[in-house]
Image 1: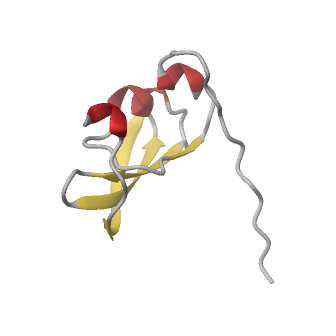
Image 2: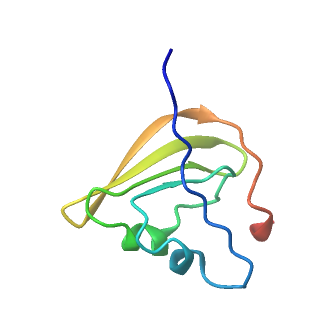
Length: 89
Protein backbone atom coordinates (compact mmCIF):
# COMPACT_ATOMS: atom_id res chain seq x y z
CA UNK A 1 0.00 0.00 0.00
CA UNK A 2 1.36 3.40 -0.98
CA UNK A 3 1.58 5.94 1.84
CA UNK A 4 1.03 9.62 1.28
CA UNK A 5 2.45 12.35 3.44
CA UNK A 6 0.46 15.45 4.14
CA UNK A 7 1.65 18.71 2.66
CA UNK A 8 2.30 21.67 4.92
CA UNK A 9 -0.48 24.23 4.79
CA UNK A 10 -0.29 27.98 5.07
CA UNK A 11 -3.08 29.74 6.93
CA UNK A 12 -3.31 33.47 6.51
CA UNK A 13 -5.47 35.46 8.90
CA UNK A 14 -4.23 38.96 8.07
CA UNK A 15 -4.73 40.57 4.65
CA UNK A 16 -1.23 40.06 3.23
CA UNK A 17 -0.31 39.32 -0.39
CA UNK A 18 -0.44 35.62 -1.21
CA UNK A 19 3.07 35.69 -2.67
CA UNK A 20 4.41 36.95 0.69
CA UNK A 21 2.57 34.20 2.57
CA UNK A 22 4.11 31.52 0.37
CA UNK A 23 7.66 32.87 0.38
CA UNK A 24 10.16 30.02 0.44
CA UNK A 25 7.68 27.36 -0.75
CA UNK A 26 8.89 25.10 -3.54
CA UNK A 27 5.56 23.41 -4.26
CA UNK A 28 2.22 25.23 -4.49
CA UNK A 29 -1.17 23.63 -5.19
CA UNK A 30 -4.31 25.64 -5.89
CA UNK A 31 -7.61 23.93 -5.06
CA UNK A 32 -9.72 26.50 -6.90
CA UNK A 33 -9.62 27.78 -10.48
CA UNK A 34 -7.77 30.94 -11.46
CA UNK A 35 -8.77 33.05 -14.45
CA UNK A 36 -5.09 33.46 -15.36
CA UNK A 37 -1.72 32.26 -14.05
CA UNK A 38 -0.54 34.01 -10.84
CA UNK A 39 2.42 35.84 -12.41
CA UNK A 40 3.67 37.43 -9.18
CA UNK A 41 3.81 34.06 -7.47
CA UNK A 42 5.43 32.35 -10.48
CA UNK A 43 8.19 34.98 -10.42
CA UNK A 44 8.91 34.16 -6.77
CA UNK A 45 9.17 30.39 -7.25
CA UNK A 46 12.73 29.20 -6.61
CA UNK A 47 14.60 27.27 -9.28
CA UNK A 48 13.00 23.81 -9.41
CA UNK A 49 9.80 25.08 -7.77
CA UNK A 50 6.40 23.89 -9.02
CA UNK A 51 2.92 25.33 -9.03
CA UNK A 52 -0.14 23.27 -9.99
CA UNK A 53 -3.40 25.11 -10.65
CA UNK A 54 -6.58 24.87 -12.70
CA UNK A 55 -6.48 27.83 -15.12
CA UNK A 56 -9.54 29.26 -16.89
CA UNK A 57 -13.09 30.36 -16.21
CA UNK A 58 -15.61 28.40 -18.28
CA UNK A 59 -13.04 25.98 -19.74
CA UNK A 60 -10.28 25.02 -17.33
CA UNK A 61 -7.00 23.18 -17.77
CA UNK A 62 -4.99 21.73 -14.91
CA UNK A 63 -1.62 23.37 -15.48
CA UNK A 64 1.79 22.56 -14.01
CA UNK A 65 4.29 25.43 -13.91
CA UNK A 66 7.93 24.56 -13.20
CA UNK A 67 10.75 27.06 -12.82
CA UNK A 68 13.92 25.93 -14.59
CA UNK A 69 16.95 28.22 -14.85
CA UNK A 70 14.85 31.31 -14.01
CA UNK A 71 12.41 30.43 -16.83
CA UNK A 72 8.87 29.17 -16.14
CA UNK A 73 7.84 26.10 -18.13
CA UNK A 74 4.12 25.39 -18.55
CA UNK A 75 2.61 21.92 -19.07
CA UNK A 76 -1.10 21.33 -19.60
CA UNK A 77 -2.29 18.22 -17.73
CA UNK A 78 -5.85 17.96 -19.05
CA UNK A 79 -9.30 19.49 -18.80
CA UNK A 80 -10.83 19.89 -15.34
CA UNK A 81 -13.68 21.71 -13.61
CA UNK A 82 -12.98 23.50 -10.30
CA UNK A 83 -14.84 26.18 -8.40
CA UNK A 84 -13.62 29.68 -9.32
CA UNK A 85 -11.62 31.93 -7.01
CA UNK A 86 -14.37 33.97 -5.32
CA UNK A 87 -12.10 36.99 -5.00
CA UNK A 88 -12.21 37.54 -8.78
CA UNK A 89 -15.94 36.98 -9.45
